[in-house]
Image 1: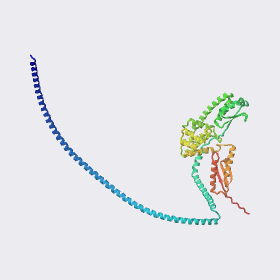
Image 2: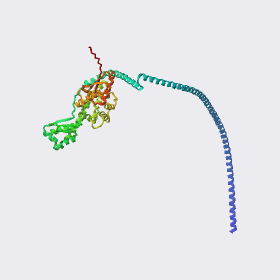
Image 3: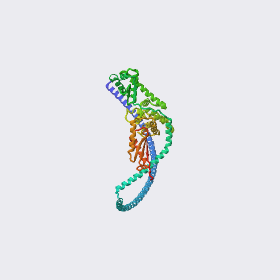
Length: 523
């Protein structure tokens, strides 16, 4: 085959292929046109449906909008109507207030005019009163001058005379009032007080004890005195240094005297000295051993004394610290009266009087036993033993009423209960009963002298006598200078002076005697 034949064949094949592809593309295009026409028809139909739905929705929206508009209009009209009504009410109120204000302003103007008129009248009256006062002052000066000329006294002299006379008359009336009230109080209180006090005193009778500021230890011979003294007095120095007591060996033959301001230390020194004398071995080492043992024994004795005191009264719940302080009172004396026995006595009297008055007996016993507990430490702590004792009980957790009774039994504080008052009464009864207390002759005589000096220091007193062992001051006054009612005032003033200047056990009675004697002689 030649090249031409090949080319011809290739051209023929290409023509056949192109023809075939053309027919196939034409067929495809026809199908596409048909599908496009179908899609277009469907889209047209869908668009028409959607348009109809949109028209329906628009129609419904218009209807809904009309309804909402109608509702809003009605609501607006209703609110507007209510606000208009409220506005009208407020306008009415404002108008009424304006009318009231105008009315009040009119009234104020009227009152202001009336006040102005009254002020004018007041000014006129003030002017007239000033004129009258001026005339009265002139008349008063004229009358005063005439009175001074007639009486022969100046204004100051007349004033002094009148005041002195009034003071004298009022003093007489004051004495009568004091006497009347004192009699009324005495009548109302004597019966019950006598019943309670007499019952308590009759039911209790305590022993009398006597104070020993020093202790005397008898020696078997003079040799023992030398052994007690020791070489160059070393044994005495050891005893005094360890006990705090003073030992005197030269003043009394065949005896040694031990003295100390602290009763517990004095007792330790006394017992130590007795044991050393009985043992016979007296040297510094033995002395120190004996003193240490005696201190332990005395401490046990103190605790035992406190426990016995509490048990005898039936008091419970007392701490060991308070028991030891109570036990220390066994070695303490006041005006020769043993303080522990005095405290027990006061506690028993308190219980009796509390029972008579319907008060708490247990609390009364507790208050009476503790009332002088401050004396167990009063030389170690500054202050009144009543306040010291109250502070001790407070730290020990005692009842506040008991603390107040202890603090008030010497009037350092104000009593806050009936039991606190009973403590003062029981303490006075225990200290004042016959034989309870004693004192030295010198102190006794000084007290009598001071009593008589206080009594004679007042004007109008003629004679003064201290009787009944210093428990009564009997005063004889001049009847011309001291009137009957004035004698009561004089007695009260003397009592106040005695309470302020003197210290004494119990109480002192002041008696004023006044008499008028009429003497004539038949010739």
